[in-house]
Image 1 (cartoon, rainbow, N blue to C red):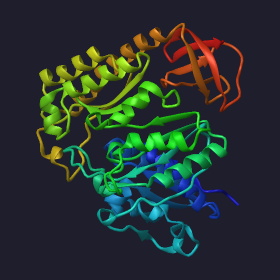
Image 2: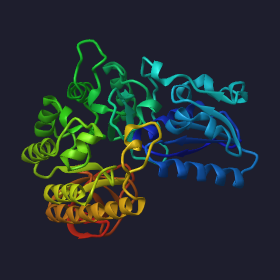
Image 3: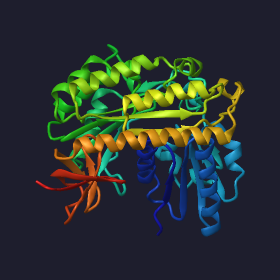
Length: 414
């Protein structure tokens, strides 16, 4: 019997959901599951290419397509060669969707905008990974002009504290040393729960109720919604990792307003300054869109200069991608070659900032979670390689950074 093959595209939330599906579909034979992403046209292109390749390599396999792209436009994906079933984002997480009888149904895609709850799924194994992910929130109530994801994920809804704690505890008992909390709009967690608790309060409860958890990390957060409990954890809690990944998108106020973001450049600058004041070694990441519609050379320069000034070491840069049905898709477009050129310039800024940041870590003792026998990530999420020797995968070891190269830090045992 051949275990299902899963091809995952997109965010960390998709990674978590793929593990849920792996467990639900474990009894199925000769099935390929493609968990799609809709955040960019490139992500969709890669998924289509993977489907065609899978059908060519394994023509007898049943291909099930799910994820945000499938939720938004199921007809398009159902028409691809080899695709036998299309599942919506709600349906893919239900065990009954993966029964032998259900697999004979070509489509199960419900109205995601009617979703009211975030289902609890206990995942204790993450294939090929040393850190685990826990979904604490699903969906988004905001309507950024470039984003189609709310129509793939539905309204914001939160997993209760007890459910999150149970999952984290199970993961720790399974041997995971680090857990990453993830969601679509993480900082909106709790808004639909009794008493409207904050994300920081959730983190405090997890750390208090699962004392064996060694490292807790957050995925992407909105700069203007970082609550005071998160700031206190960054300052005082060594098990709360010194790392913030900001959903920034631009460093130009006019572009941010046209994106319908809730922050301006100065708001993001204050967040970065406060984080560094509390933890001078903190790793800062940011998502940025290059070539957003109406972005001329001067507005692009505002973003480039902002990122250079802030020295953000972990930049995730995306050339703008039209999403049909979004307001931005109707705005005056920047030519695609120019978008790619601007993205390259921003990535160069990020590489320079990363180099300077890693150089500041040279000489420091770092606690590194080993993901291969010779490499892993520090608490600040800096990539670290052993200069010599090997370590056990999944072990957290103390290393001293000695030099910097194009891949990150080289280090030796303390």
